[in-house]
Image (tube, rainbow, N blue to C red; front, side, top):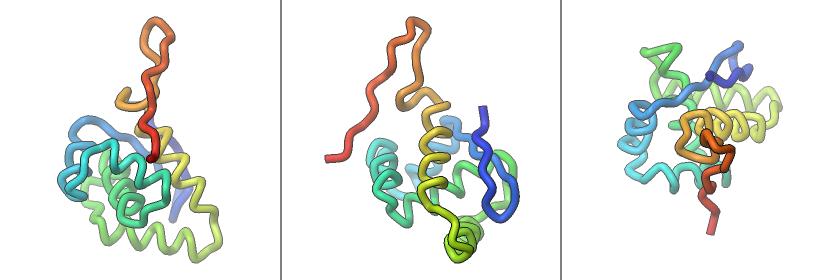
Length: 113
C-alpha cells in the first residue's frame, strides 16, 4: 500500500523489489545500510529514497528532481522527519523490514550501530 505524503504536491511513496534494487544500485550499498542512512538523515539516502519511492507514480522522475523536491520542502520549513517516517513506512510495506508475517510475529528491524 502506498504511503501518502505532501511534498511539492500530494504524492505517494511505494517500493517493490525492483525499486529497492535500483536504489541499491544507485547508492552502491545494501538495503540495510541505506535504511540506516535514511534514519540518520543521510542526504543522498533520502534523495535517492524519494527518487525510488516516487517512480511508481512518475517513471520520468530523476534523482535531481527528487533532490529539488526535497530542497524546496526543507526551504519551506517543513519537517524532514515527516519524509524520513514516510520512507520508513513505505519500506516496511514491502516486507523487507518489520512487516508482520501471517502469524503476527514482527520481522527484526536493522539497527544502527
